[in-house]
Image 1 (cartoon, helix red, strand yellow):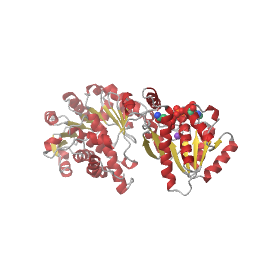
Image 2 (image 1 turned 90 degrees about the vertical axis):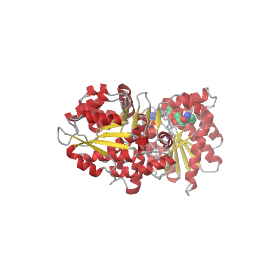
Image 3 (image 1 turned 90 degrees about the horizontal axis):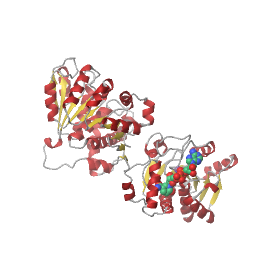
Image 4 (image 1 turned 30 degrees about the vertical axis):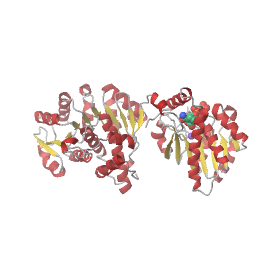
Length: 522
Ligand SMILES: NC(=O)C1=CN([C@@H]2O[C@H](COP(=O)(O)OP(=O)(O)OC[C@H]3O[C@@H](n4cnc5c(N)ncnc54)[C@H](O)[C@@H]3O)[C@@H](O)[C@H]2O)[C@H](O)CC1
Ligand SMILES: [K+]
């Protein structure tokens, strides 16, 4: 599903109005009706049916007037509060304001402190608040007076439905501009905004309900939008159909360079995740001294013991053998638990120099690249890199806080600069491709912030690429599946004790449910 920032939704609105002759007031009516329907659903189950609609002076407020009108027409008690002088209301919002005035709907103007006291009192008596103060037009920090209004709404302990985006959250970045409404539900109009998905704003939205307000699909297509929210349908479309008449050779071969003394677990998690994601054959080069451990733990993988120069570390002492296995494989993953060493750096350089196969670079491979930035030039297309913000900071030499605040931009710039797919991990993982395409993932939970979780993701990406999925699509599908499996694990056992291996356990059923489009309650 496409995602937009505030300029793009404005542009889309204009295309709908100018190129498709859809009057803005029709879009506003549709928006208002969508919200009205959600309000009805909410108050149906409540005894106190009185609704307060708090409207700003822009079109978000205009949507609020439409909601108020439909509630009024249905005989539901409704009061409208306006957060400033109504003489500033214009355009379609003004037309809807005029209508509710004619209908004699109870409208109160919120200016001055005394008014706020009255507002507080009315709020205490209502059943639901509709937040229509600011939408995608929020431009700067919310001023003190409106912050007080938002504070009264947030402290009310009433149900809160926000229109389009919780007021105070920036539609283009998800930042909180001073103070924001903490909604139970947000009815998102037309397409999700970045601020509906990105943190911290996402925490303010409650349940997201995305509604079609009649913007033609052709208008969306014409816009050439580069940002996408990863959905179940998108992932279902990526995962390959499995024919009945098959053998393991049909599902690809993966080569996983991972693990070293003290970190064999990372290798095991990566390999198991790749196997549980459906790879046909998996080989792992193993320093001779670790072979027994790996063989004992990895029942279904093939270990390839190698002579070791540094004990417990895969090096290039038998690169011929490594090269041969690499050439037989469809994908190579490097880095989980490999340890930081000269051996790994040399191995990485040799691998990058000698193969054009798709490569997944994670953990210590990323640290090696950060240490030896000259290797970045060796990276070929079809490479996926999976940094968390710390690794991204080492790679780019950008400040961690800067990366946290500009996740999409940083991932996209790096991806374009080095012609690689970047998976910038974290809550709302960003997948960025060299053509500027961006995918944002909404699945996952804090329980997945646990050792080995990233190794599992690398395994899933590797397993998917091995099965013939193009690297960027494999990354998109993998981050979604990884998060969804984590959500299922959290539902079963909670977030606190969730381990990376629990995510792996849920992979088969998660993939089954995505492919068969069965709703999982997680
Ligand atoms: N295609 C659609 O999705 C449609 C969306 N609609 C709704 O319209 C809003 C966007 O409306 P817009 O008028 O552009 O902006 P806002 O309502 O958010 O109002 C902003 C309003 O307030 C002023 N302002 C901005 N920041 C501040 C601030 N910090 N303090 C005080 N005042 C501020 C600004 O100058 C504007 O006047 C969208 O979200 C939808 O809800 C349409 O109804 C249908 C099509
Ligand atoms: K709003």
